[in-house]
Length: 77
Image 1 (cartoon, rainbow, N blue to C red):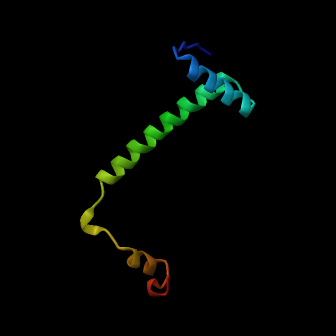
Image 2: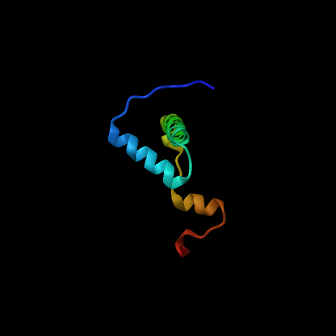
């Protein structure tokens, strides 16, 4: 394992330490969890944008068509 140093203001340090204490974990775990979550969110966003950009707008179905495909009567909803 390797180390990374961060410079943060005293207020943020207290907030992180307090959060770690309340959660019964370490400051390192709190910071690592936040970084991992941010990276996952960014990755999810990029994948969503790629999917959105690749949509075939000429072949989109509306909700009633989707209901019909799975055997739901749209008019009874």
